[in-house]
Amino acid sequence: MGTTIQNLSLNSSDFGGTLYEGCNEILSLTKPELITGIHESYLKAGCDIIETNTFGGTPLVLKEYNLNEKTYEINYCAAKLARIAADKYTSQEKPRFVAGSIGPTTKAISVTGGITYDELKQNFYEQAKGLYKGGVDYFLLETCQDTRNIKAALTAIDQLFSEMQDIIPIAISATIEPTGTMLAGQTIEALLASLAHRDLLYLGLNCATGPAFMTDAIRTLSDLSPFYVSCVPNAGLPDENGCYLETPQ
Image (cartoon, rainbow, N blue to C red; front, top):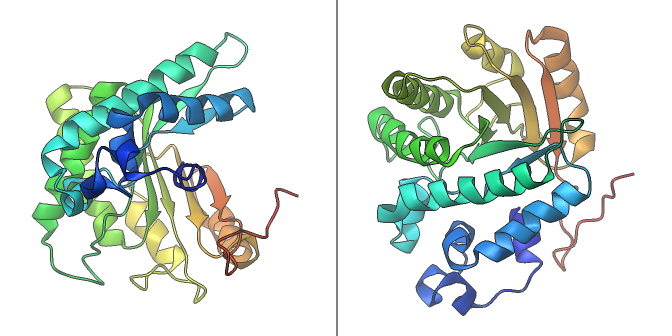
């Protein structure tokens, strides 16, 4: 979603003004037809799952644009846009699903500090509530860099489930550094150990520096994980012009 938006060469008016320029999440409110178009382009290409435009949808991230008070609205509307698009392309033979994207925020308890566990939990709760109410099929905690952040997010989601008296699936996708660990230093084995008690839809890896650097980690995950395994690599690293040299092939 983010890379596709960047390729559209948008200006400040698309975001609702210079104050919000660069906040992709606000586009679900200011340019809903643009976000719908992106969703539909992936659905037309045959995607089974689309993600909501909410990678930076916690109050913590939105506060950088003075949009933290719109957390619920942004996440709810983003989920609705994805839900409508997915339903439009759903058939009995090929159902389509919506993943509620929950990014890592700009704080990692074990790395950056500057935030408490309870504060982080509240941030994830506010985002998850909007996504749930908007109709996502499951939560996707993605680009995870710290197991303590993951724990805060899961605790927040558990609280939401208790209040809603409902449960939807949860998937987790972490990012591994070239060192072979998460940013906070945890290994694949440590990640698995911290999540062994959960009932996850799948556990996987995303982003990083391209597929070549993910093979060992994916192999370890496949050997040890009791869950389904996902792999969504970046297209390598961008060159000096911001272009990615990796291809689908």
